Each structure stands twice: as C-alpha cells, then as structure tokens.
Amino acid sequence: MRPLLLCGVAMLLLAAFAFGLSLGLFILRPVLPQQPVIITIQPGQSFSEIAGNLEKEGVVSSAFNLKVLATLRGDVRQIQAGTFNFAAASKPGRVLERLTKGDTLRLQVTLPEGLTIAQIAHRLANAGYTDHEEFLRLAMDPAFAQKLGIDAPNLEGYLFPETYRFGINLPSRHLLRFMVHQFQKHLSEEWVTSAAESGLTLHQLVIMASIIQKETAKRSEMPIISAVFHNRLKVNMPLQADPTVIYGIVDFNGNLTRRDLRTHTPYNTYTQRGLPAGPIANPGARALRAAANPADTPYLYFVSQGNGSHQFSRTLREHNEAVRQFQLRRVAQATKSSDLQPNDDLIGEDDNPGQKPVADSPPGKPDDES
Image 1: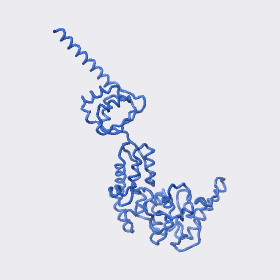
Image 2 (image 1 turned 60 degrees about the vertical axis):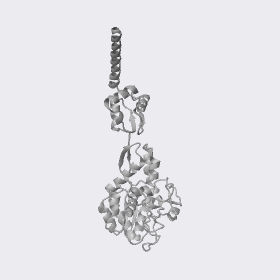
Image 3 (image 1 turned 180 degrees about the vertical axis):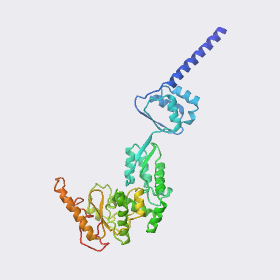
Image 4 (image 1 turned 90 degrees about the vertical axis):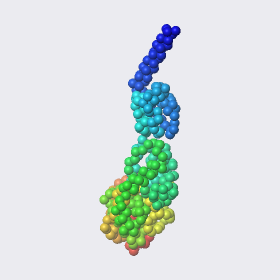
C-alpha cells in the first residue's frame, strides 16, 4: 500500500514539474505570428473563446496555458473589448498586458480645412474605418445635430479639421461628438460676439467661414475676402462665389459651366442674394476668425492671379481691368502651350464669368462679378 502511495505522489510531483516546466517555457518564449493578425474582442466574450482565437491565429502557442496564466495574474475579467493588431513577437504576458490595457488598433486620420462631410466620410473609409456609412448618415441627420447642440439641419461646417486618432471600432456617433466638441473648443466667444455685431448668427458665421475657406488657402487674404463678402451683403449684392455653386451640384464633374451658374439651387449665390442655405465645407479656425473679423477695406471684387493669390478692387471698372490683365497673362501662357483646347461651355481658362470684363453697372446688378 505504501509503495503505491509513494508512487502516486511521485507521479503527481512529476506531472506538476512537467506542467510547471511547460508553463514556464510558455511564459518565457515569445511567439511571432506568421503574418500580422487582427483580432476583435466583443463585449462580454468569454476568455476561453478569446484564448482559443489567439492560439488559432498563432499569437500564443497554447490557449490552455494562457488561461492558466491569466487566472494566476487576475486578468480574466480585465480584458478590454476592441480590435487588436498583433504583428511583432510577444511573450504571453505582453499579450495579456495589451488586452487588459485596451491597446487596441487605432487609426490616424488628418482632415484638412475645407472638406465636406462626404469627403470626410470618404477619407475615413480609405483609412479603414468600418463605420463610415453610419458616420455619413448621422452627420446629415437633423435630429442628431440637435442632440449635439447644433441648431442646423446637419453637421456640415461643424466638424473641426485636424488630425484625429481613435479606435478602429469607435462608434460613429462618438467620433462625430468629438469632432463637434473640437469645433466648440476652438470657437472663440469673441468671434461669435463680433459676428453678432455684424448681424450674423452663429450658423451664418459658419456659412461665411466655409465660403472663405473654399475661396482661398492664403491666410493673409482671408480677412480681405471676408470683407468683400461682408461689403456685398451690406449693399445687397449677390456674393457670386463659385464654390457655393459647385456645392449645390450633385456629382460635380470638375467643370463649372455657364449653365451651372444660371441653374438655381439653394446654394447658388449667382441666382440669389445673401448667404447660401448652409455651410459648403468644414472651415478651420483662421477662416472662422476672418468671417467674424473682416478687414477694414472697401473692396467689392477680387480676381485670381493664377498663383494662389488674388487682386482686389473697389469698383467694377477696376475689377474689369484686373480681369483683362489676368486674361492677357493667360493668353501669353496659352501661346507657349498646345494643351489648351477651347470649349465654349466650360468656365475656366480665359472664359470664366467670374473674371470676364463686363460693362460698368451699378452694384447689385446680375453682371457684377466677384
């Protein structure tokens, strides 16, 4: 009887030693997946299932040993939900550390000034964000905008442009909430007050800023362009801003035509006076500041100089001369290149209504150009 007992104890000790050795080797040996692995842990998912998936994908060598190690460390109930990327060789302890700390796969997306909601959603999709369709739907939902404290039919103009870092599975409602929070964080009360003194509500300030943002990327010109539009509003002149027309065109193909300028939409500032129906892009802080604080200038017109800057004029006659000089430069450039092909319907090159000389007429007439 005693020899059998001793034999049993010896076997148990041997088994314990073997298990301890196995567990020790498991703990000490890093495992390198054959290829980068992305594993998603759902809220409430059992640790046994998680460990099994990690073994199946080659992140750990043993699901059983991982469960033992997690139990000894007290990690079983500390695992965070999310999407994790495993690409480098890692010891099991490091794997558990990442799972408990929520070291999830994160995206980094840079949103420059002047993108529309649709363009932002497209960028998110290209970056691998899976909830981009819901992002677009919620951003255009008036009820959701109201929940975020935005008194507008959608969030166009209120998604602040900057670099965002977030988990790949972050729900779109949280991402939108954070983008709007960034807008509210950067919006100065002083700008809102200045805009109100000029007769603009907050929403109208955002509309004005979005037009300025689309008209120029040159910081020094933003307050001057703002002044042109403020001055036009004061004398009831149409803003005649091409970007507003483009925004109102469904599936714009890149070619702005005379027919487009004559076709009325709620955003066409050639066919109507005042501001368009809403923001046409998401402006940055500089455009918002310029919209609230226009330069003290009498300008009513501006024309592109073809190098990213503009020439500003007080009268239509001055503007026509500036346009003529611009066209002469374009003609000179055209004679050096055979790439220019005439098209009577397109707006651009030497045939842009926004830069075409017209007969002098009082402010507010349809022939006035900006």
